[in-house]
Image (cartoon, rainbow, N blue to C red; front, side):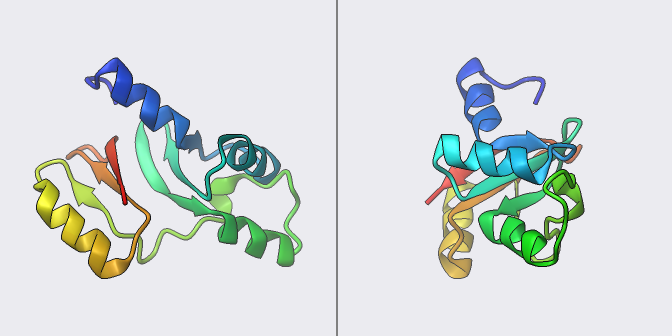
Length: 117
């Protein structure tokens, strides 16, 4: 996220968290920011999308609330866009797969944008 505008960088930080954050802290962030999905980063690299459902499944599986989110999120089947994709094709993907938001990555796997439905 090195070359983003201040506004875009701020937007991405608001919906992102580090993979080493606890389940408890992720729930708190979702609650305080009034969101159901967060992008999980490990360093600057995109790691996956964390949903409230991922956190619920972890609790049902009796995971500790101190468990890191990177250990409980699903990484399979998550739709992603590349920064070279045009906005119309991203919108089509979002509609086809009924996604609430679409992470956009660069060639280095860094989160550079997110498109919301």
